[in-house]
Structures are given as structure tokens and as C-alpha cells.
Image (tube, rainbow, N blue to C red; front, side, top):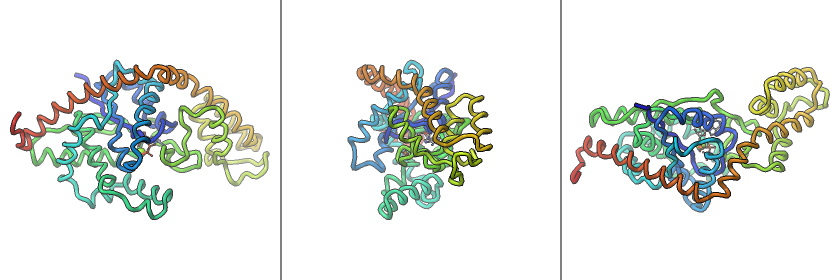
Length: 336
Ligand code: ATP
Ligand code: MG
């Protein structure tokens, strides 16, 4: 019996390097050996984008195409749309009795995201909705509705998986052993930093290199990336460890190049402008095969539709089975 994977992404924008190195490469690697449900979490995206449904709908297709472009194979992965599985919403309601408001407010991921919203939108960012505060509960339902055992994620998601495990334990202790407790699976690069040096590259943070960025955009972004602020002149020695340009060289450039860049930088034998230009070229080369596959799906939208439709159908079947068990355990299986 294959183990089950459930993970997801919010359709709030295109995939960026953070998704790829933090989680996506693991999805691609793991797709052959597991029963894999990959969720486009549009209901979760609506928690803080409820006033912009066009954005969420458009990005549902964008994310689907990006995932296919990084190498997700529809024969091996059920790629599905969260809103089309009402069983998840049903399970969310039952789970919401099993978690306190103060526990949600203390969740480190929620705390960080509220702080980020405040930074981006001022005091307005602080006034969060019931739906947003509750999204870890709905995420717990996402995972358990598919009996997900493994959840490949970036490390910003770890507190949410922990929250899910607590909810599952509570459910099982009250209603009997019914649901599966999931485990997070982290990549080697657990968190990719932003162009601005922020600890996290994020779709909603304006500091990301997207996989679909065109050459001109890549150039502009890399030329504006944070470097060692103590380096003033071209031949000043600098510290590569605080430089985002070096940081991305490490992600996308060849090992021997990276070594050379590091030692030249430390010696003051490398100017930042030249270093950025080399990164632009390395980045373009790295993204090229992804962009080619992406172009194919742009030209074949009907294939993308079919992948989503089939994936959603398979996901619904699985969630229906789980919910039968849940309703029985909760003694609300009246007409089943
Ligand atoms: P948003 O800002 O809208 O939440 P996001 O960029 O955080 O967008 P998500 O859809 O929330 O993206 O996350 C999808 C997956 O990608 C999660 O597993 C998350 O941990 C991972 N991920 C996102 N950003 C990074 C990053 N900078 N480094 C590593 N992993 C990341
Ligand atoms: Mg996120």
C-alpha cells in the first residue's frame, strides 16, 4: 500500500523560487511513490482575498500550469480545486469545535502573517476576519479529508501541521480512532529568502522571482536585489553571506562557479554589477526548461482543464469516503 500525500498552494499568484526549492522539487521527486493529492487551495486564498474573486480564479489556472511546468505529472498526481470538494468545508465545521480561539491566535504562522499584513497595509492589516484566523482549521480538514500521512511544505507551514496533529488527536480521543495524524516533510532548502533580504520570499510580499518572469523582469529584479550594504567601492571586500545575489547564485548556479564567486567576493575581486549580470544569465538558463513546458500548457488550456477535472473527481471520491467514517464516528450518519 502506498502512503498518501496531501499538500497545497494558495492561488494568490504564480509560483516563485521559494515554492520550487521549498516544496515543489519535493513534490516532483515524491510523485512516483505515493498516492498524491495536490490541492489548489482557492478557499484558503479567499480568506484574505474574498473581495477579489477574479484574482483567485485566474491564479487557480496559473498555479495549475506552473505546477505542470515544474514537472508534476497528472498520471501520478491528483491535482484538484479545494472549493469543489464541499466535504472539506463540512469537516472544517466539525474541527472548529476542537480548537480554541487563543490557540489560533498563538499559532506562529498566523502571528507572522498578521505582522506581515500590518507592515504591508498599516493598521488595516491588523483587522483580520474570522475566516482568516480559522484557516489553520480548514487546512487541517484539507489534510485529513484525504487521510494525508505526509505533507511536503516549506518551514513556514510547520506550525500549521502541528495544529492539524493536535486537532486529529483531539478528534480521535473524543470520537474514537478515525483520522490519520500527518507529518510535515521538509526540503533541503526549507525557506527561500526574498530579493529584499526578507526571511521569506512570498507571493504576497512583492519580493519574489516568479518562474514565469520574462527576461526583462528578471534583469530588473536582480539588479535591485539586496547586496552587502557595507561594500561601497567595486574592489571593497564583502561578505557573501549577507548578499542576496550570492544567495541566489547558490540556488541556481553551478557549484564551481559558486565557489569562485564566493572567494572573489571576499577578496574584493568582484564588483556587484558584474556579479548580478552573471546571476541574470544563470537564472535565465535555470528557468528555461520550466518556461518551455509552461508555454506548452499556455497553448493547450483544454489539457489543463482536463487535468483539474479528473484530479478533482478523484479527490472528491476520497473525501466522500473519509467523511462517511467521520459522520459515523460523530453519530450523525443518519441516512447513510
Ligand atoms: P501567500 O503569500 O499568498 O501565502 P506563499 O508564497 O506563502 O503565498 P503558499 O501558497 O502559501 O505560497 O505556499 C505554498 C507552499 O510553498 C507551502 O508549502 C510553503 O511552505 C512553500 N513556500 C512558500 N514560500 C516559500 C519560501 N519562501 N521558501 C520555502 N517554501 C516556501
Ligand atoms: Mg503562504
